[in-house]
Image (cartoon, rainbow, N blue to C red; front, side, top):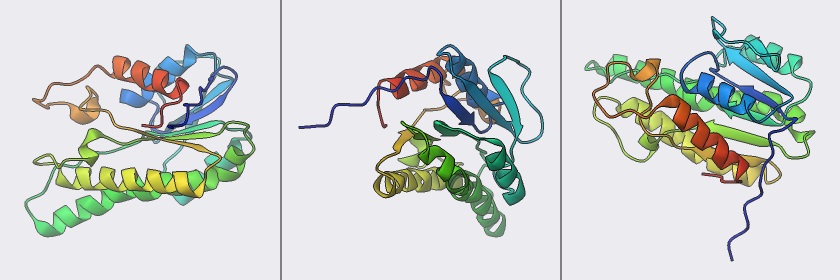
Length: 214
């Protein structure tokens, strides 16, 4: 018999979202505000978002910089939910050397850096009565998209890593989220049908609260 999903209440929770200043990250931030969290540590790399709320604490966080990660981890004294959202999309390059460099950059952003951030915040997460880590992956993890093969590879790696986190940390709810193409700065100019970021965020957060893990 399948286990009954454990419902999750965001009210009064401390949440950290990477890449929260725009796109899906900003939409997630605004959606979670509707659930009465205690605080949202809204991570940004260079510029905070253009919205404010008493429950938002803008947090300068470059997940690819070890010092930035350490500073952010030291500034967060309690944490219930980590949402690894920050991402990049570099189109496939014709030059093999450049394509390999692109793949390295996306693997660092989508795989190595989220795992390092998780490790830095693990002691704080472990102090939570109901800790959760949410990795924003992509449907592209399951099928290569022409012109975005490196991106798909890096997201597939994060998918497998998320499964590994579940095995290593059974007391932390480890969630993989797999949105399809979404209307954000990253997909500007795409000719594919794009989902609305606000609607996607609402569906994601509703799923987290319902106890879904994928």
